Image 1 (tube, helix red, strand yellow):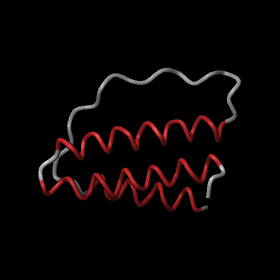
Image 2 (cartoon, rainbow, N blue to C red):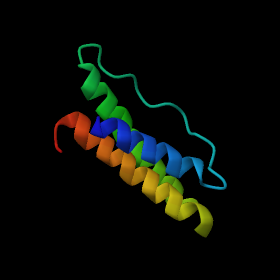
Image 3 (cartoon, rainbow, N blue to C red):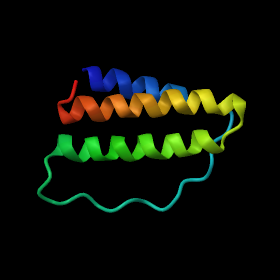
Amino acid sequence: MFAAAAAAEARDAAGMAPSMPALGPPGPEPAADEEPPARLAGLAAAAAARLSAAAGQAGPGDRAALRRAAAGAGQVRQFLAGNE
């Protein structure tokens, strides 16, 4: 449940940003033998990295929102990886 709350907060924080850069190409597909929580943790880590990168390029109005979203994605990764 903690992962869901952190994901919702991150989504909301990014949604409040006045503008976002275009998405880059998708990342590699996860290994077929990975468990779903591990796959989701990997996706959350990728989201945190992209949001952090976007925050570095964003204007002042977007920067704080994207940093909050990146932190939320990082929390989701920690919860799913069992590092609460």
